[in-house]
Amino acid sequence: MKITVEATVAAPIETVWRAWTTPAAIMQWNAASDDWHTTAASVDLQVGGAFSSRMEAKDGSMGFDFAGTYTKIVEHELIECQFGDRSLQVEFIAAADGVLVRETFDAEMTHSIEQQREGWQAILNQFASYVAAELGKKA
Image (tube, rainbow, N blue to C red; front, side, top):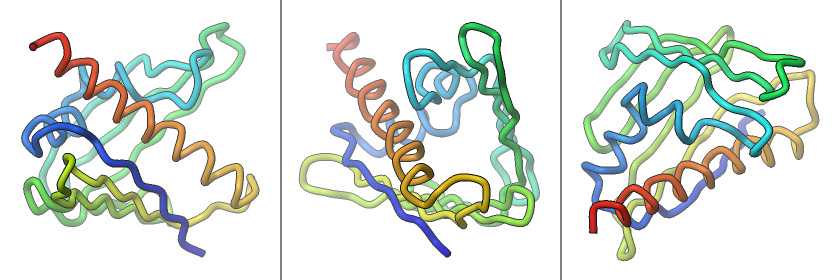
């Protein structure tokens, strides 16, 4: 089963793309809640290139790695990748008020569909907030 989440990011596509594909930026926004954080990230943004991020509870009680390989990249438009036996497609779509970021991914069997949708949506919302805050710092 595929799950889709999306958010509109009020920023130019170049800014959105950079925040999505830069390890230092990923470490700032890649968490579903304030009690988690990303402690490491790497990006080799090319077909066949690898990506990874280490997510950990801030209290040190648990953590996990999210890693995979890029399978298709269209700059400022699309990123597709594989992680384990699952796939992820991220679309960057021009919208009147910024960029619509749409993630479609294969569900896993450990958590409910709703838990997965909520978790991925929370991270995407964090991304949108991070980009908006970064633009505010530059204004």
